[in-house]
Length: 178
Image (tube, rainbow, N blue to C red; front, side, top):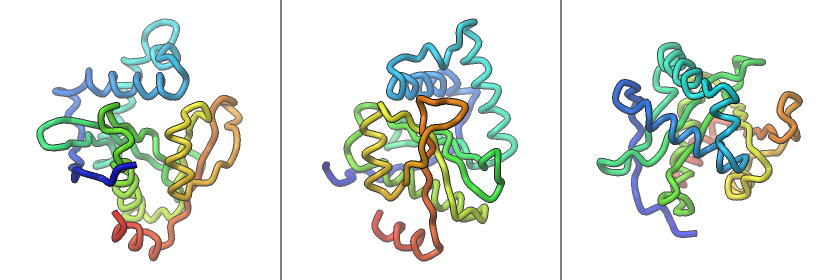
């Protein structure tokens, strides 16, 4: 794997300007995870609209939790963060996303560092996310960076929960590695 060659910038999503890009990124994340975006769009086709409503609400209720990832003047990714619905002291990564041309370049560590800093500001030392075991590159990244596979989700058997625990020292140490 090549070392990170670009310093990424994280800016709040502007839904008025970039709503279609948000849908495109989220749909591609479903393709990477499940082989198809069908599940995202839902049988009635309303999935994209529901997603944009959810994203708009998330942006309003938790500022700096939904961001586009920029490399120069180009949007190359997206992050969506929240608190875990079962325990507000646990952070939850709804989406880590990079466009295909930016994958495999070591840039994911910058997305993870943004999330670690964000959750530290919220007082969370534990973070969870969901990933499909069929998304081999994502699973390899998570395992390499210390995420622990907690097993299948009860509500989505084709998806696993992953968890990472950060101590203050680990977050500071992680920052110096990035």
